[in-house]
Structures are given as C-alpha cells and as structure tokens.
Image 1: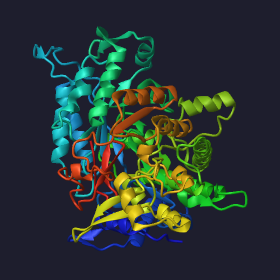
Image 2 (image 1 turned 60 degrees about the horizontal axis):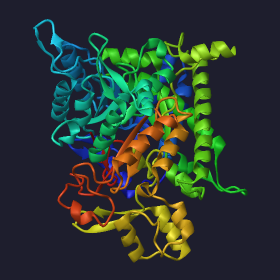
Image 3 (image 1 turned 135 degrees about the vertical axis):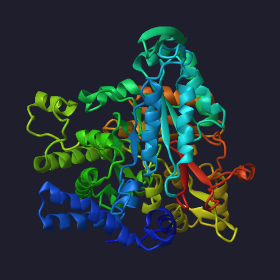
Image 4 (image 1 turned 135 degrees about the horizontal axis):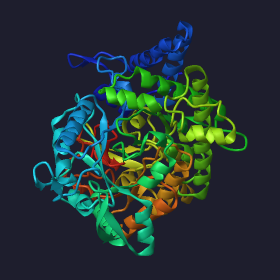
Length: 614
C-alpha cells in the first residue's frame, strides 16, 4: 500500500520532481509514480511481452515506488514520461590528448549536463604542462589548466532548475602533474563544480609501504620522466583532503582487475560520487531499496523479511533493465556504450535505520556481520534476477569474453548468461532518501537532531523520529534534551541518556575511522561496482587520521574512498554543534536557509533537497 510521505518529502517533490505547467505544480506524488512506472514498463512491448504482462509490470513498479520500498535515481523520477526523457544519473566522458579532443569533451559534457546528468572525466591522457606540442612547436598547458575549461562550462549550464552540474575529475598518481592536481582546490576559487580523485595504482601503494620512490610517466610517450617519494605524495593527498575535502582516492588497478567487461577496455574514471566506475561514454542507471522498511519482528528477534526483499530485488532489477531501453540518451555514443554492457546499480538506503531496528550499533561487530549477510543476499538475488531476464531478453551484447562469461565457462555454466554486466552498487541517495524518509545510503545517522529554518524566520530543532519515539518510550524525552542534541548532533557521553540508547544511536562524527571504513569494505566485498561512502571526521582530526583512512581502505579491499573533516569545506553550515554561531556568516541552503550536510563530495539540504557537488 502507498506509504505516507513526510513533510520534507513533499517539499522536495514539489520543488524538484513533480510536473509543472507555467510554473505551477500539476502533478501529485501518486501521479508521478504512475507516470514513471507506465513509461518504464512500456518498453517491454518491444521486447515481445504481451500487453497484459506490461500492464502488470507497470502496476508492480508503481506499487513498490509508492510504498517507498524502492526508488530509482532522480533523473528517472523527474524525466520519465516527460519531454526531456533523460533517465540516467551520471556519465563518463573521455578526454583525448588534443585541443580538439578537449573541446569535444566539453561539448559532450554540456549536452549531458543540460539534461540533468553528472559527468566523470579522466585527464590522465593529457600530456603534462610544458610538454612539446609538435604541431605548433609550443608548450602544452597540461591537465590542470585545461580542467578549468570544464569547470567554467559547468558553471554556465543551469540544469533546468532541478539539478546543478556535478563533475568528477581524476588524474593518475603517476602523471607528472599530479602534485599540482592535488593542490588545486586549496584555492577556494578554483574547480567549484568538481570533486577530485587521484587514480592510485597498486605500484604506488607498494611504494608507500616500502618507503620507496615511484616513476612519473608522460602519457604522450609512455616513458618515465621523473620520480617522487610515494609517502610524500600520499601525505600531500591527505593534507589537501584534511584541508578542503578533496581529493579522494580511487584504487584504479583494483577497479580494472574486478571490472566485469574488461574485454571492452580499461576504466579510467567514475561518476561524480565515485560509486560507479564506467568505461568511456557509459551511463549509470541506479536505484535503491529502503532496507529499513523490510525489518520485521520475529520470535527470535528482529530480522529482514527476506522473501519480500527478494521479490523487491527481482522487480527492481527488471525496472532498471527497462530504464536502459526507456532512456533518451544525450549522445549516440552513450547509447551504444550503455547498451553494450547494460550495467545497472541496485543498492540500499536506510541502512542506519535498519541497524537501529535490529538494536545494533553502527560501530559494533554485529553490524558488519549483518552488512555481509545483506550484501550477499542483494548480490545473489540480483544476479538471479538478471539471469532470468537474460533467458527471455538475451544477455548483454558484450557478454562474450566478459569476466562473467569466462567464469561461467570455467564452472561449466556457460548456458546461464546475465542480462547486465553489473547489478549492484551503493549510491549516496541524497534526495531520494529524503523522499523515502530514511537515512541515506549506508551512511550512519548524520545527526539525531539539527536546526531547521522555517518560513517565519524561526529556528526549530528537527529530531530523528525513531530517536524521539525511543526517548518518549524510555521516559527521558524533553525539550531541553532535544535542543541539546541539536547542539552536538549525538547523545554519546550525555548523562541524561541511557547507555544502551547511546550505544544504539551513534552519529557520523562519533564513529571511528576504522568503523566507517570497515562498513564500506563489508559492502564492497559483494558489490559489483563501488560504494559511495563518506568517512566523516571530527573537526579535531589530523592529516594522519586522513592518511590512516586511505591506507585502511586499500588494505580492506575498497575501490575508493572519500574523507571529509567537519568544517573543512568553505561555506559549510554545520547541521549540528555549538559551532553554529561561527557558521552564521557562511550561507546555508540558498533556497530555504536550512543547514547543509556534506556527504560523498556533495552538500545537501535535508529539508528542501537542494544540492551541489564539487
């Protein structure tokens, strides 16, 4: 049955998702879900499904969205069944080492961003600054200077008032200009529309461990042109991330070693939030299940409703596979690349809510055990769903020679192909988690209470509804408690909150680096793409803490990592803390004035859904 939407969810839907005519909202949330379900299911007619089968699929899709059990990425909700028709969240655009190649990539990015998509770029093919340009006899500008062109172009494109341009810029750690790349956002006027990540190699991490130097390689010639001390470069990355939240790290060799379609080439970049490594011109097609809604009371204790969850996974995989055909692609090359692999990214949100329902603290060992169990189930069921689709619709076109194909041949199961090269990822789910009324992605609860500006200028403490219920049931609720929690965000260390409640409700800044990274790694072990997760650090954290997070992420098998130290990004308005007065001069949400949170390289308003990445 349809779920009740929160006040915040309705505000976000009215502001960004529901159809308008002459600026007036003319669509209800129920009509939006029906619009999306009807449009997405309609492509099955061309796949040979009977009309009654398509109608049944449409009803199923509408029901699981209206129940808030599953939601697709924002462009699908916004654009399905409407003239724009662009349903993918993010894209990777190749940047060739020539003036024409650079500006062609800018043009491609502009075509993508005006439809509401984000873009990822690797600038690693560009020759270093000062290198020879044979055609003119001059010197190359280098990747860092040319990245500014992409930043300016993004600034000039306004995405219909619903989504602002988001970019990921990546450079290999062995590129000669790597130090300039690492430091560029230390100037707050530069690269405001970009998240940055260093593409780190296994050889670099081995050199860090050995205290050795490593080669810098000119991509134009393929020859070594210098060396740097690996530990000093890692220190530079950690120092910059400590100061301004960028760059993150992507372990590029690990990404390619595990990429299921390595037969098509190497992955060079990811989408802006880092959870989807993509080949050039591929698009990411994402959706998430609110797992908090699947926790049920059993005689032996809380558990997931595994049969209902399995049904939702199968329905969601079918939905996302349909989206690939329902999408109107901004460039023919993107349509060809995306349909060659038919990658989908089904993930989860509401993980922190589920842990609370299980009475498990986010930073307890039992949370990692449950994470592994859930991630394993998600992978197994999504693969079963993809195999079932392949039986009727055929495998993804690049199946022959893929890692899956070779694995099946080795296991004697060559007759069981997949419809999709990947089925799982963990996205940040910024605005769709507001619609679902749940915690975002696999993040811990950011704050149990925070201050929210309302239209009459008053400031209210908005309290996590589960914590509010627990406080009232336990007899320790009070206005003073909630106001105090809005000052600090969490309850650990408070004498007026029972110890068991403190254990059960840790917040992002109360969780250790090891617990943050461990949770990301627990999901990554069973996720085909990657995991978007912000390692949130207290303001008092040091660059050594950032460095430790990077090294631990590599050791535990993560594909990438983003670290954010509280207050380090210019203009952050803290959602919590006695530091509020110090932040008054910095802007909050430009639309409603509410404090912003920072996750996965983006700033997000949990009240109205405004966001910006980079």
